[in-house]
Image (tube, rainbow, N blue to C red; front, side):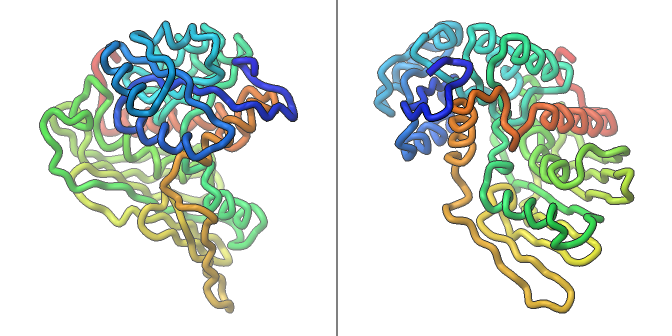
Length: 335
């Protein structure tokens, strides 16, 4: 299979390379193991010992002691970038320049200024690129968007979503490290913002307040306003275990997600004059298989981006996150 895409009807296994060896890389690799048409053939890390240990753990045939070596591996069709967000730009750019398709963990980058050149590079090199926003690929979320598009709740007027963790986090935790792009907003707030974007698009106005400590945001609230008159009320936190729920309300009804909206397993549709309807997913929601399957579908179809997670949408989300950071005065080293 060509590294920038495949051809219709090509059912050979898609060969994955894993860039980085942390917890999320391990979870993604475990989920890939459940897909019969996926094969993990290589792992890359800046530390050879780390790559070799990861390879032994998952039975991966090749371990590379640098990102460049993984990107240059001719047996790799697509690379999953699982570094912390401060390294996304460099890692993705290296893979794209080597002609490797890329699935990059969210948030896409630290800011739009880093994300735009990656999109331009992918288009220049004619290589597939996608942000790993697993929520958009979730069958339950896709069913919800179908219902909204078909007018099940009328015109959308409000979106509510939150994602907070109580902590406390160890002082050395990546979420507390500004050099790694830490804080509540980029790691957790990206989910509520992306949820709102899925339903309402890019906002016309952004209002936000945040509590900063140690160079990162620990408690942030956002109100996004839209030209349609709709609004989104969103929050994220490193100091509070919030409900982690999502809801969308329209002129004729509402849809409510219980705790864990970002890996949704079910939702309830409420419409005036009708009994509530519950929709459930075919598989557990807390899984990476749906986004991996979407990448492989797109590669086999010869697509250079996914219609479920379009690149322009990822850029729009980054612009909104940039606007929130501007409002709360959050800057990362080097910006």
